[in-house]
Length: 128
Image 1 (cartoon, rainbow, N blue to C red):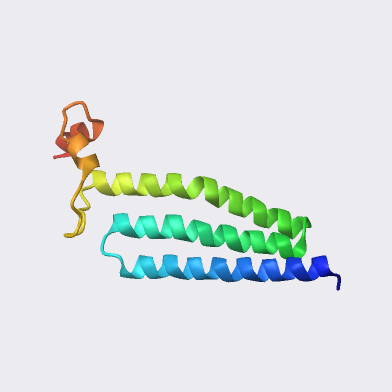
Image 2: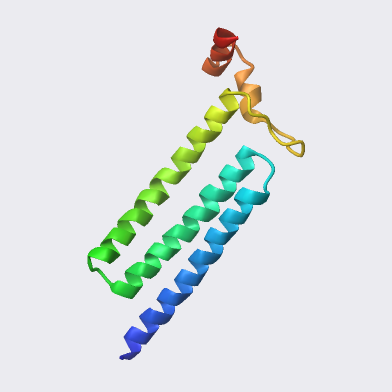
């Protein structure tokens, strides 16, 4: 093994450990946080960072082989779609009246939706 192979192997292992740690934190946040909005935050931010780290680890380990390219493609896809999906889930939860936890102090989205021009306000009166 050359020095560059050893360096790539060490970097791959470090990225893998970082990724597993962040995925574990995302899972822990999913289990421990009080409401859907906090859980979405934990799983989206921390989970995405963890999965992208694991996919970079795969790329460093196997190089630009078909598996490495697939790993980067999956990481990039998740990096681009997870925040959008979390936003849509949070917005749907808010529209359907899922409340915030008792410790939450600000609901800016709810304040904006109290206005008559908000389509969400119109939806609530339409379905009531």
